[in-house]
Length: 423
Ligand code: GDP
Ligand code: IMO
Ligand code: MG
Image (cartoon, rainbow, N blue to C red; front, side, top):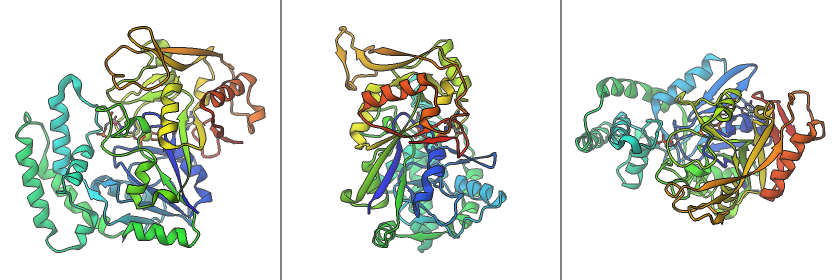
């Protein structure tokens, strides 16, 4: 029995939330292992839209423990908004939401630093969600951070003040930004009561015990593989390991206990924030994708950059994660396109063809080379099985399977929990 992993293969927003909500019935524990409120995972239950930032996407179901791992960074204010929203919708969550004591806390002054750092970068800004993610992980690796478990120990307020003062000293290197720290702190301290009420565990022991009891565990990725701090399009990345390796350090699982790795991709590609995106479309086709796919950020509402699927990029993500199984989402968004394209190589500045992600992707004017596929020009809503999909849609999917050398086990054709074709 191992820990299965479900994660995004692109630049985030692949539809992880919707798919976890669908597949979690096979698991008794679902855990987040990295990231924080920069994530926005959308679920639809009975036509009700719910966007989760910190809480795992199995929270609507009974009989599943939802675990926030040590690799996650938690903003108590966002967390309280999420728990209030779920409670307001009638979901009882206290008995099934569990938090790792070793998860780090995002302080208001981390957000202040995030805003100041981004602002100072000018045109080179990352496009951060400004939730304080980078500064919090910096304090974690810098060995200055405050953890959820510290809330239970004496001297928390003192530790908080010391860290805040350090942040204020640091902030002086940046031009001043507008941020009402006092007000943010008031909200932050008030929200700790909510956080304190949830069950805390030493997550490594919890997972070990769960596996020994034969419980099925699923790790839920946030962001996407191309936003990984080591293997993403650095420096336009997030500050955690979003890839499958992050599960080991993010919930305390030994590598040998990682089970299946399931990778999700959209039928096309999006990115929000700065950084390289070889297949990005700046024309009407890009606008059509954004409109048809409602491609606006779940956390910030920013318009997402849109383009064709990139198989060079996907093969890289499959390699680095050890993906065994694929899931495709949002193929219905392509219903009205006459021609659909997929990039299978890049030409570098000298006209040389490459199928690997170059170190200098950001600088050297790599040109994506495309394969073309005919569109199907019809809705997919009637299709219950793979065979009922239009021939052109099947051809697109099977061609990608050949090029990625992996099968799509699920194909998502709409926002609803059951708008999924299983194979
Ligand atoms: P996540 O961050 O990976 O969980 O993805 P987001 O929730 O940020 O963005 C995915 C968006 O696509 C959400 O608005 C989902 O409701 C929507 N979505 C997911 N799967 C499908 C699908 O198959 N078709 C369509 N049209 N929308 C989908
Ligand atoms: P989910 O889990 C898409 C992007 C930001 C920015 C960069 C760094 O919903 O897929 P950060 O706030 O981490 O400092 O931002 O990463 N980013 C995401 N893009 N989906 C996400 O999460 C993202 N989380 C961060 O836009 O470019
Ligand atoms: Mg998202």
